[in-house]
Amino acid sequence: MTDNLRGIIAVLIASTAFVINDAIVKLVSAELPSGEIIVVRGVLATILLAAGVVVLGAARPVSVLMTRMMVMRLFAAGAATTFIVISLRYVPLATVNTVLQATPLLVTAGAAIFYGEKVGLPRWMAALTGFAGVLLIVKPGNAQMGTAAYIVLIALAFTTMRDLTTRGLERNIPSVFVAAVSAVVITLSGFLVAPFDTVWTMPTAGAWGWLWISAVCQFIATTFIVIALRTGEIAVVAPFRYIAAPLSVAIGYWWWGDMPDTLAFLGIGLVVAAGVYTLHRERHGLTNKPLAVAERSPAQ
Image (cartoon, rainbow, N blue to C red; front, top):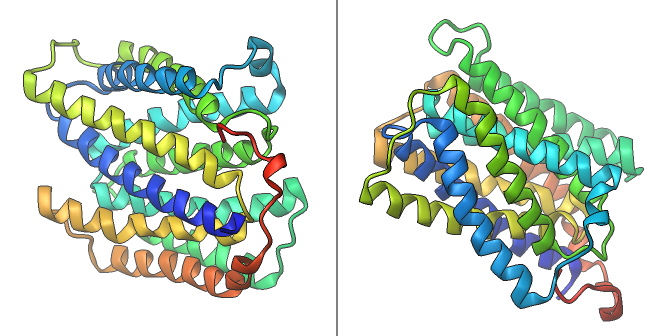
């Protein structure tokens, strides 16, 4: 199996888990405040990820956390999750997830700027097309969307930063370790939201069940997205995250009856088309040779 194929499989698993996780968060948001959801789910996910670190022998010294790239990655992960959870309270699931589908395009552009990856005019045009689609979806300035549109765009900026810094981490740091530490930071970020929340309440039995399922999804999503972004070429792997767009539309309609308007559907089409075009341009990357086994971390 090539590195690119391995990365594609990982990103498909991660993207599906992210959408299910976001749907559950939106569902539980009707009962619990955002900060409480972040903290409780984060604690549960941290327990699962910490167990994974122990089982896989993936623990690393605290000094690993002090590198510039790791600090930036952890900050971005905490901020991205915070703004995503807040936006899910006010914005339809399909809208939030489709906006976040611009992340692969922005990451592709960022890979050229920060890592020197080759990005020609077609990729830049795809990135701009995807961004135009995002603007059609959120329609900043639309009175019906209000400030929620800007919350989603802030979340997009931090997810892009998170993914770019993930790419820059040293390969000898196990992916499950990165995911576990990120879960701790995300949990702590929930306390920053608490002062702006309503009063925290004890979750019902049903809410506890949903939060456990959400934690499992977060465990899967955070681990596999780190693996995906560190395996293969970004321009080949990233576009497969577009599976989240139709999946989120389907779940949003099924659970809440949310249906994007005409402009939003046009925006969704532009974002997905830009990703598919990028995939079409980069499909030859599937033939890339995998790295030698000796170069891989057993827990990666």
